[in-house]
Structure formats: structure tokens, C-alpha cells
Length: 608
Image (tube, rainbow, N blue to C red):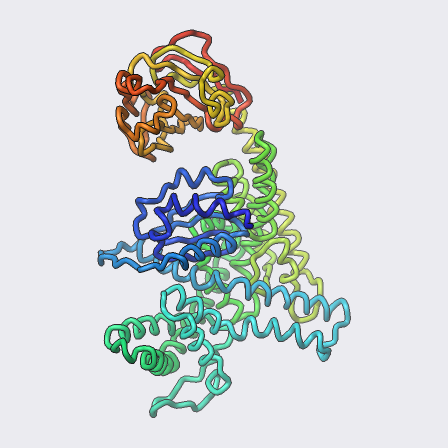
């Protein structure tokens, strides 16, 4: 039994069920879902699940941050989709904005490259192993061991168009095998880099496609057009036989004659642009990339940099811009999460910071960003400083990474040059970059965190959201509240039926049955106001919610109305608990010593 078995029903329930999933995918740490109806997403409920580190809404895609175990969750979700035959709902055509088009492009690039990363990571690290073996352990390049390991490394990159053909076609929701077929044609020895080749009298430009990325992407995009056209014109009775033939016989020549060579030219221009940036901004460009990486990861646009990385490696044999900058950024992000443990009082949150931080310094940063940094400005800024300063050093010394592996401590061997020179200055520059980035990140996170703590009030006063008689939680006839399972707080027997906002903040939870509401104050206190006991069974009768989730509210603004007479006549207790659901974040919660209270009178004093 998987530890995520209990999460899947909750996940599906709060996205509108498996029938609401239009497509599912995943990257290194995120489950990526496209929904038919985004309004069915209950983001607040999902964010409360401890196994979900964060939710990112990116265009029409919902990204659920799980961490390195995301393939397990993806497998469980897709198993549910297989059990329920999915029919893609037609979508109406609409004019898209530039931002939507940009998101579509980034999403396609990300969905194409991310599934291939395990191959590239394995092949890249095998290259590092071979490098170490030949340099320090006298591994002969004629031995069987070397040949086998070298074949793994060679196949991982040589057949890259095959892998990308599969993932690009899958992302476009056409046959992945046909995309793979096109990639295999491009790297076939009868075509790849062959001179004096013609097709139907047209000269085929000589081009090397092995280890390239853009030609196959152009080819699969064209295949998508042909595939959709063939679907419309070929009768169902012969589609199984005719469609694959028609698609491949049209796509291959167009790719070889036009799109493939064009892709190689585009790749060359990309490398030239990066070289231009590096030549004119030099070390500053690497520093800027290191500082901006946390923002790129948050928006998912970091995945769009892979074509740039491959273009540089294809041209130079190494990347001295993107990956070195991300080495500084990744370890800085992980270090900031670890440093933030100093300010966490809750054991669960300390554990999250520790595990996410270790994962981050190893090269996978989403758990750190979405689990820790996004909630703590001092840690986020610490990571930005660390990545920027470490990146500046990497740029100054011209640090180079020789294989496509997510930069971090685990990827250090990929900074050893592939010419057999061993632990050259480049490797030691990588070590120093890591040291600088981690040190800067930790120092800035601790400094900003302590400064923030000093500037923050030592206590917060929470005012009453309603008038009535005060009752201790312990006296309530409901163990959920009396045993403070949801958190500490107080209860009020209402004098009237109006619930108002105790302070300015945002609504983080409403219910269909109108029996409870959640608010996060501007100072970060999360309050649950529960109108009566077991009133969920009223199914919304005698209760009215006046605000919506995510709505900004001001102190005194009406939130909810109760018909006290009707509720009590129906046999329900109208006592209303006010719970601080993030009680673990605070040192102490003191209650008002008065026996009754008027709306907006002081009710709770929360100490740090």
C-alpha cells in the first residue's frame, strides 16, 4: 500500500473528480493537471494536505507540488483515469492574449523536456563516472566495462531526438510512437549527416540530427498538423492502416527538406545569442540568472531554458551560462530552507524545512520553494542573494558544466572536464561557487529572519467577530473543539446572528453548507469561525455566507448571517467556536477574561 493512497481520493474530490481532468503530466516534483472546469478546484482544501507542498495555477494548468515522489502520485492518478474512460470535452475557440500564447509555448517546452530528464541525468552522471574512472582509477577505454558505460552515455544523448519525439507527441496528444518514429528516422545512419542525398529530385540539406533538440520539435509540431488533418479526411474503416502511412510519408520529407535544417539554424542562433549575452554582460549575466532562478522555478519557466542549454553544449561541449548559475541558485535555495529551521517552532514544519533543504542542495528545489520559501520572505530573499552572489563568482571564473544534470551537490562530477585533466580548476571553482552560495544564503536568511522577528509585534490582538457570552473551548460538547484538535481558541454563545470580519484580511475558506468560514488576517493569523455545532446537517438552511473565497475583507465587514431562532428551533446548539488553526506558529494564546463581549471587542491575545 502506497503512503499516497489516502491522498488520491482527497485530491480527486477537490479538483472535481477524475472526469474533470483533461490531461495529466508530471515533472521532477509537480503533478501537472489540465482541468475541463477550473472552478471546481478547491485550492484551499488541497493546500491543507501535508503531502501537498503547494499549488501553482499556471494558465489553464494546475501544478500540484508533491516533491520527488511525484511519479508515484502520477501513477495513482492515471490509474484512476484508466478506470474511468476519459472523453476530451470540446473547448470553444477564443482569442488568446500574448501572455496566454507565451504560457502555451513554455508549457509545451516544459512538457516535452521534463519527461526526458531521467535519461539525461543518468547519461550525464555516467559520463562523470567514466571521467573519474579513466582519470583516477586507470580504467582502460578498451575494456568491456568502459565500452558498456560509454554506450549508456552515448545512447542517452545520441538518440535524444527519439526520446524528445515521443514526449513532444505525447504532450500534443498525438501518437507518441509516431513521434519516436520520426526521431529514429532523423538519427538513422542512412540520413543523419549524409551528403548528396535527394528526395523526389529535391536536394536534402546535409545536417547532423543526433543529440539535437529543435529539429525534432519542429518536426513533431508539423506532424501534429498532419495528424489532425488526416483524422478529418480519412474514413474510419481504413484509418488504422492509412493514417500512420500518410502522416509519416508527409512529415519526414518536409522535416528533412525544411524543418530539420531550419531547427539546426535556430539552435545555432540561440547559442550565438547566449554567447553574445555572455560576451557583453559576462559574469553579470550569470549572477542575474542565479538571482532570478527561484522566480523562474515558481513560474515553471525554468524548463524553457533547456533548449538554450542543449544549444550551448552542442556548440561548445559545455554550458557556462545557465547551468553554472543554477548551481549557485539551487544550493542557495536549499540552504535557505535549512536556515529557516532556526525560526520554526512547529516540529512538522522544521522537518519539512530539513527534508526540502537537503533535496534542494542536491539539485531539486521545488520542495524548498513551495514548501518553505514561498511562505517566508526572509528565506526567499536569502536564496536570491545566495544565488546572485554565487552566480557572480561562477561568471567571473567562467565556470563550465559538461553534462545536462540538475546542478547541485550530486552533480559535482559533471564539472570535471571531459578531456581527462581530472580535478582541474573548473571543478574547484564549482566547489567554491557552492560554498559562496550556501554561505551567503544562510547568512542573509538568518540576518533577515532575525531582523523581521525584531520588527514584528510581540503580540497580536484578535477582536471578536460577534457579540455574545464567552465560553471556554473545554466546555463545548464536541471533542473536535474541546480537545483543541484544530487549534486553540475560544467560543461565544451569539447574542445575534451577525458574523463580521475581526480585522482586515482574506477569506481562505467557505463551505457549501454555510456553517463555517475561514479568514487569514493581514498579520498572518488563520481563524476558523464555526457557526454552531453539527450545523453542517442543516445543509445551508438558516445560514447565509456573504463573501467568497480569496475575497479581501476589512474589519467589521459582514461575513455570514445566522438565523439563531430557526437554528435553535431545529434542535442545534448555536455556540460558535473561534479557532486559531495555525496555533502551532505562536508561543501562547490568551483569552479575554470578561464573561461577555461585543463585536470588535478584544477577544484573544496571541504572543510570539
